[in-house]
Image (cartoon, rainbow, N blue to C red; front, side):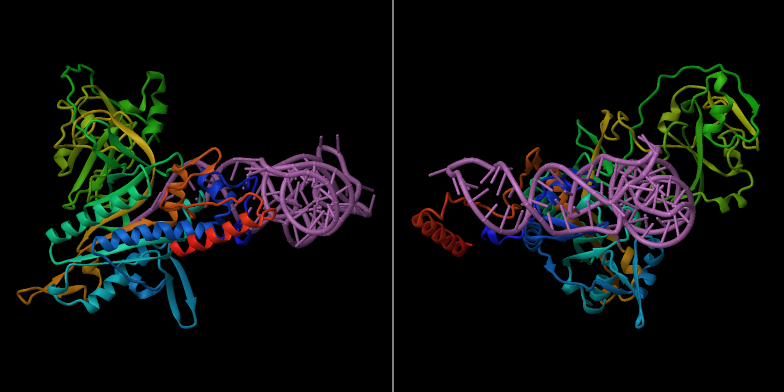
Length: 498
RNA sequence: CGGGAAGUAGCGCAGCUUGGUAGCGCGCAGCGUUCGGGACGCUGAGGUCGCGGGUUCAAAUCCCGCCUUCCCGACCA
């Protein structure tokens, strides 16, 4: 390609509203242009980079035994209602109403793929099956940002695996996991697979492939000692012992009118020097057996509900008159068929302040063992920098990062929801598919790579990603017919070699 | 959706406080010079001053409403 023929509109100065390095550089170097917020065009160089990344992904997917397909972007609303995600994902769904019906611009394709495979694959002999697609997906992001990092329309690779058993699903998952590592290695990214929470997609085992970055929107917790790493929704911390110490502070009840919540109580007792970490934050949830629990964490920590539990809602207070909103405390709850669980840090021997389970009253001087007891201990807070690693108790570090890919073991979640997502096993019995799904944000990867591979002068693409491998500069071809001839031959040969 | 900032030429900005018919740099076009390491000179094109309304003899400038974009937060398979 001759540069004189190339559409390469560079900018000396970056548009003022481009903040992230990748965004500025991709604009300035003429790779992309914005159409509207969160929607970008790819110019020739941008498209080259995009194709190069897609090809790496294709090669690794194919090697891993997956087959490429292309699915519709336009989905009938009904399949989203069937799976229930018309509701759970309604904030990001882009709907299209036409005279012929209601549609959704696909934000992801679990529903569609399950419908196809459900209809066309009916025997265990056809499993395992792994299909992938690389195509445009749509999400009505409330806040598109950082150029290609978070957009409303983006290209994504999604693979879906179908297996006959949980074990086989696990092995399909491992194959994909390994393929992901290869892909990110070829993109020359310092990625880190982390244990993650499944979020709206459901399922149990899953990993996020994170790339540390200044403009990351997530943090993951990482242990330098044992390589434990997990995102903040999933990360837990270890139980570290406290030295026992007797607390002789007296239990006192205080009249605290209109002081629901940690902040207001701290305000109330600020002259006595009360701080949030001396309070017990009490929260109610239903555990995975749907049994009611009251959880305790120090007042300065954010709560992280255990996996599989459901938070208490406003309306639930009607069913449990013993729980007084804003004044819940651990004292006396065990007698009321409510399980009290606490974060490990509540073992610290001290006198706590918490609600008195009656409106407008709080206790001070609550001592574990004397005034309240705890049935179960767990890690119930969002981890913070320095918390002990759950595996080796070394201090955890929080790393700011971007999610480049996400792999899930979905299990039976979608097979249960989509009619016909089943096959006949060797015994002639009908069974549900064990599914997995595996996403990579392809357009986002461009931004992630650009973030990691640039300097103050500009972009420095990894070899496999770069739009062109070589750039020939001829010195004054107009002056010398010999130079011109050589140049033309060189271009011809190079093009023939591909 | 909450908080903050900004919309003036393709890009970066000034002008607004104190109303008087819009300017700078880069880029772009023409001509000339220069040219084996990101050239220079002259000339020129290009603007509904985000949109709508109001005040005024007169609005980029003052007032009201709206829209858009960006940043922080909420949200995020």
